[in-house]
Image (cartoon, rainbow, N blue to C red; front, top):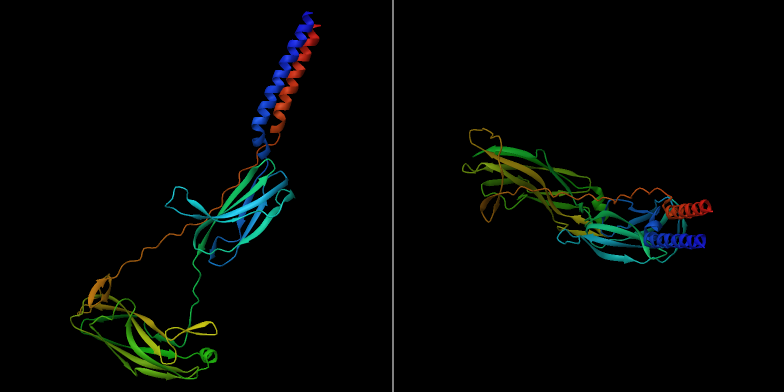
Length: 348
């Protein structure tokens, strides 16, 4: 009778242990299911322009095969002013089910065409049976759409790009012009008359500068070159400093911006000149700031501050855990059963 009672107690204890093991297994089953599953999403480049397709690739980087699942991905935009730094701007539902995607096998390849600039992120999810997700993210940058550089209807240059002229002094330089044959073929024009004038690269031409071009207009034919002489005279009261000038040419045939068959052509532009006014003694100061004139008033030119560009980073994929976690509770249960069976045999 006592042996029967002992056997019932032992079986009850075994049942309780198995129930506890089952409860723990159910509690930890989502964690167990995740073991060995991971993905990596990437883009083919780090920087794109608006309208340029972004190639998105998602790969199984885990050591387990993804037997079933449904992929989804969306695009987030970075906003540093918000607590939640990324906000969703595009979402793509998975329109296909995954079957047997083995380790290192591509899960899907898709494309996204950005419509706005900024720091953006692609976030990929694989919805697995049991309604849990495998997730990864990758960041990239979208820049404004590049502007097509217009063709120059003629070429203009000077024999020097930097001048040092003392107060009350003068300087003479050459302005060279050339008409490319390509422009004539594109636009159907054979003659181009260029008028010359002095301009400023920032603000207005300083009032103390007197410029004379000889000749002040040049007529060119395709593949023809011409030269004009530019004389600069500086007033004796000119303030010392650096100034940005430009020997500008204006085409009589083309305006500032004209399109031919979708190709922009520019007819007004110049060749930059750096003018430094030094003391009448001819002494050159070590450093002189850059000035410009606005409404007749001399002003100090601002110094540009470069803006750092954030570099996109990819979220690292965690290393796969060591397999075998699923067997822990089963081993514990078997050991418990073996222990009580052994005790029962000894009691007999």
